[in-house]
Image 1 (cartoon, rainbow over the protein chains, first blue to last red):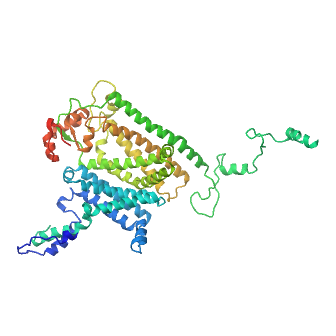
Image 2: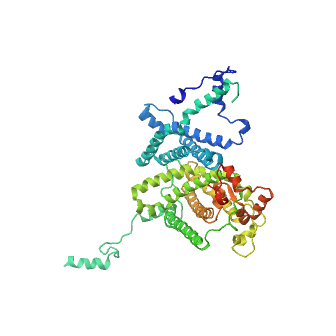
Image 3: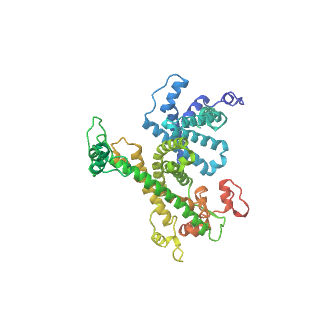
Length: 188
Length: 338
């Protein structure tokens, strides 16, 4: 992240027509929804994307076993976890979203062409982590919980070297695009 | 003298000897009538009362539970396993006798689009969810007799636990995928003129006259509607089993389990035929659901009415055009490099 943020850039000598900062902040939030003109074409991507990301966020930070893990091993304090039915809904959404997104990557000819091995590994590894977590739900089996923790560790090792870093880089990426066009007075 | 005589007297006048235990003496259990009534062997249902408030909390012993357990092990698991094995054998025999159904006149290299990206995403989503559920379901139903001898009890315990949790979590996704599939494919699966004739002629097996077929033949339509209807029943019975906190008693849970298992087994067996026909059974069929495109000769040979529509609307593209659309270089001979 540091190498991205502190990378040197060519100085822009043109006269600024509008505020780059305003463009950056605007673009960070405006990209959460698709442009009207292409909304129909990208609807699957947005719907499945939100299903997956929101579901995964809810699972990661509000599933009771995870909250307990953080409390016992990391922070020393926890927070109110999701009720069981909430956890189930979040898990369904995450699984459905991920399956649809990965299938779209395989089925859409343009996405298929531009996808690399890294993209597929990231999707499959995330699915495996979620699946092993689902297997270990009963929490009575040490073996299954160990399997889940092992896959999580694999995922964490792979994370910084892969496309999964988009979890953090999406913010500076949107900000840079927004700043670049904002300075020129272009609505990105 | 009397002591010596006593055994003879005892033998002559005592209770009858138990033939299994020649040394023992048969006696009627004084509590047998009470327990027979509790077990409801005469068919009456005894509903007691309990301080615990809940569904079925007044029932001491569930007499039907034994029947359900015996049915599950002796009939359901047994016949279910035999059915699955039989389908594999039938498909193998069919393939050995019939071989792969080839494209009439061979592949031309000219293609027509059969399924859009969205239709393929919906199909494969349902397929992935279905296969995960089928695998975990078969492990839960047939795992004990088949897998314990292979894996041992501890490993099988892990596998069964994982399968149960996986099956329960992925289950509701099946209903969602089914609904997505219904909306995507229902229009092409409505009854058309000629479908009944196709069915009565066994899809062309009976008789020599060539049958006219639209986008989907009657066999495909039957599979679609079976999947929708039986799948809906399986999904709903699964939800009844998954969420037992809406007043379901043991009877409803037992019935739901039986319906769920029989429906799921039926779907799995038929799906094996679908998977066979869509892959090795018919040349060019798998391309439809992977690339979205089929050879026009395949369309003309198997779905002539749809093929004619494609010709009339000028939807046929060459191998070079297809390769350009996919961003690939066409291979020599007009085949599309995949």
